[in-house]
Image (cartoon, rainbow, N blue to C red; front, side, top):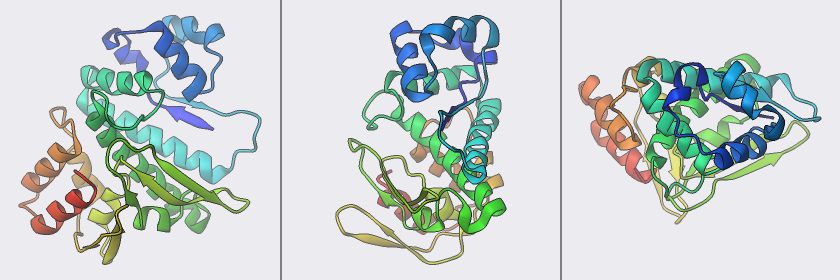
Length: 244
């Protein structure tokens, strides 16, 4: 099962379309037979959000998480506009997914995905609790990676629950900013940080996702500016631990 929020109804004219790259995107990332559909997708359907799956059994909790993930991207798009989104989607298209973070606009992708993963995981947990596709442990004990490393996802048991996540995309950072627990954020060199940042909310996160904010670093600065430097020392340390 896979999804995307290309927001093509409003953004298609912004994209510098490379036919080969878009073919790879639809066939490898979305698993859509691009040779049969790509013309119609752009000229007629122009989907904003795509959810696709193969012959496997899809769980309700997994679908819920994916849909909220993509809807969160739509909310982000509605705030930042088409030009911003075109650069974001072109990064994903050019790298057949998230890549390793070294290409142009990788920071833009990282920022969009931390919002998408946070909302997808959190709202699936609200509804399904421990049955959610990603366990609380996978985000609470997220292992940050430097750019240049491919993401690692580890699944377990018959429900295919994600229990371990390592990535250069700092997908656990919003939960660390939000929760009131004192967490240990582990990094791949064996060091760790005691996370004491807290009291941030989804509304405060969304408020900081402005059209001029194009990286996790810029997001951190705007978030602190808009919230009277709430937990400034702890927030700066947390972003440094996530390599941003």
